[in-house]
Length: 338
Picture 1: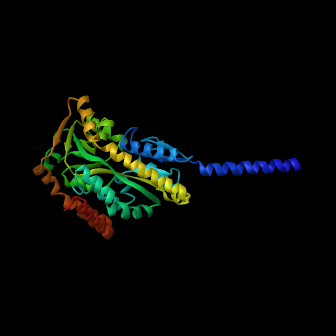
Picture 2 (picture 1 turned 180 degrees about the vertical axis):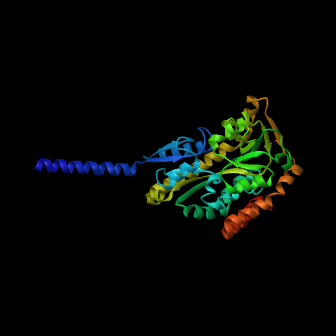
């Protein structure tokens, strides 16, 4: 009887010790939308390394396709299956309409230094967006730019008229569809996994992405004409399931915030010069690639169509969207000195 009691006590003690150890050395799951070595992956690895070097926790990273498409990993994060997710506002726009603001063409400048300063100092980015994400059960940890958007097409393009009749792949984002409609094209929403095949078979005649993604995904092989329109930057956001984050100890919350800061600093260094390196790789790999950089007059023809996209954004988002757009513009003026 006594021996049984001692054994039971020991078993309970061992179980409690195991639970305590699990609480202090968890394995956190983190999914993103890109391939190994791409920008979101570099950010995730830097985050993982900081967590593991400064705690007993571990971070398991899931890359593109391992747990499904972008919508899938967001649903898994909201359900608490994943603790962290990296997702572009291009997909989050269906969940948080205001996040579509990044797809208003010619809102963000193309100058890298100004863009980075904007992300560091913007009230909209650092104060307004966390509140919007929190409404969807998400703790916004970092928003960061990945690179200037580049359009790839089946033939060189210099005017909106050149895009007429072309099916251009867009993310499942109503405002991005409005942008390409304004540009003269036919927006065609497609999951990322279908883009290469769609270009190859001619179902779509073009798409847009940062140049590093065009290189790593091999899109230049089936869509070899690259057009720099200067209309925007690809932006992404790293976030946590809010219940998970709120349930962490203050020490672990600070650990996560510090890890996100460290990953952000690392990624800003990483993207410097990345576009140029990626373009060089593309040109070395294919003699069929052409590069078109629109001049100011050509860009103006596209820029003149941006106001109708702004109007559509406000129609979609109401007063909150209007206030966010005003704050966005004020933040941009502050960093550009206008």
